Image (cartoon, one colour):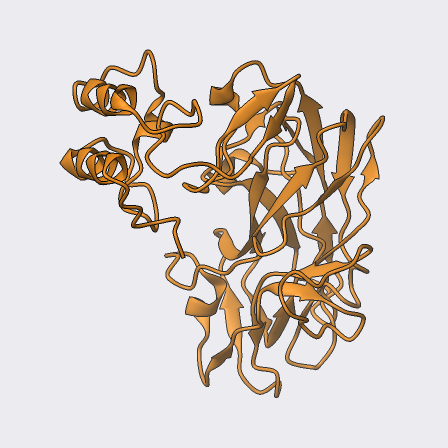
Length: 308
């Protein structure tokens, strides 16, 4: 997903709550995907991105060393603000990277970490099948640690990664939207060893201001199987053709020329993000012979990524 552009140096805080250890100063917040959490020391994170473009955040936790036995992070729709249109959680974007070097679960001292399914969830926080969420919905991404409440984590002074989630606006949206936390201190929470929700926590929100896109290069949904198009100031992502790197709706010799340009670090016709199509699972950030082979295969009707 495209990284957000920071307007102010404040951070969007994840509405998590704490009880029990009143002396512990804790903070939960959103950091634009790929940004350094240290760049968001306090307050509301204010970002802008293009209408219709998915905007992604990591959840981070900071504070004094504190004992924690359980954690849950929830987002609730509908989002407030905006002049017209709406924003929503990108269903399926709720994720948890347990390999992250600063993942909260890595600090678990004893026992095992019970990972909560990243999902849309109902009033009982149960996960329905993907695609079955109806707004208003609550979305969960994070870790439930030690649900039997005997294990302990010591949260360090430095930031700890908690989870990831993305949001997107309708194509008619404008203005600034605020992402709300679900019932801080009751649903969104951290729990101390005394079974109480930790209280002394700051919950900073995130304000997302929408601006019109100007070109296709402004739009990116991270999906190799869609087209990234800017239409009348809004990003849209119709189903595309794998290998159609110039995004003109067909496979031809000009797609091959774009990859050859990319091999020479020339991206005047096709941007890097469109030419970098291999491997299928995740772009590697460079144009290589593997991208060339992928386009050559596509020219011959071989689709290794988008055909079921």
